[in-house]
Length: 153
Image 1 (spheres, rainbow, N blue to C red):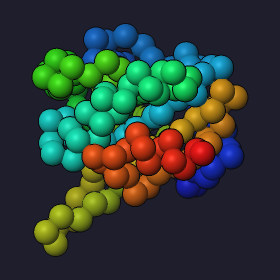
Image 2 (image 1 turned 120 degrees about the horizontal axis):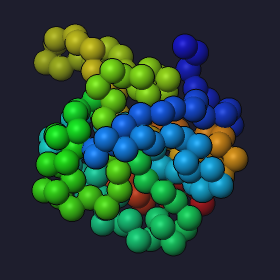
Image 3 (image 1 turned 30 degrees about the vertical axis):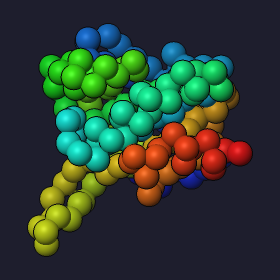
């Protein structure tokens, strides 16, 4: 897959959320979508990012955004994460990495000198026409909403 760029059409996807419901990109037609990919439920950076989006969720809704998180965790893990932190938006359970591969977020990572495959932290802002408006590869986990809103002017 070639790397996604701002301005191009976002890849369509169909996946299951934390409750086993089918979620598709086309469900968000005519809405702005914050599609964020994160490595793992209930880890410090992922919790900070998700809670920042939660804390600013009403402001995001007022600006016409929907929010959707994606990780390779299973539905039960997502349910616990949502309950523990009272997240108001759905989380995609991408255990087969279909959505991550479509968006180029599954890849090599390094930690303490060790290389392994995992989910890289990215956020894609998709506009009402289904085009990628902005890509964040350096996510400020504790300040992500402000980072998004500042970049979009």
